[in-house]
Image (cartoon, rainbow, N blue to C red; front, side, top):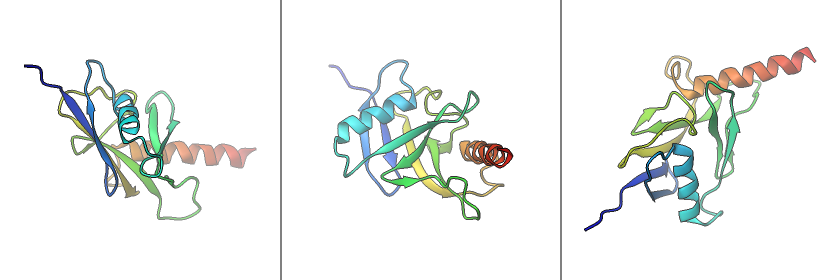
Length: 137
């Protein structure tokens, strides 16, 4: 008897999907699998952005709700990338999954203390560096 191993991809307050797991699967592949399983752009869309070698690719939009980008004032909202309920330290292309893992995304208000060691801090720093470069032009 064969049992299919899987991972779960979910958006807090949004859709979720159970995706067949395969050896060497990363979180980006699981997200792509969830998109294909849901197969309805009125229910689930997403966009990725490359944040450099340290972070890699991260979700910057889900269902037309984008990260805050170069906002002039708080609050700053970002999509938090969680694996098994804990904030990931790297991008979705670098996180390797195991059977039974859960990948989730939650829109969070940026908090410098809470997000010190999360990808949200990296996103904020990356966007601040872009703002600095634009001001220098």
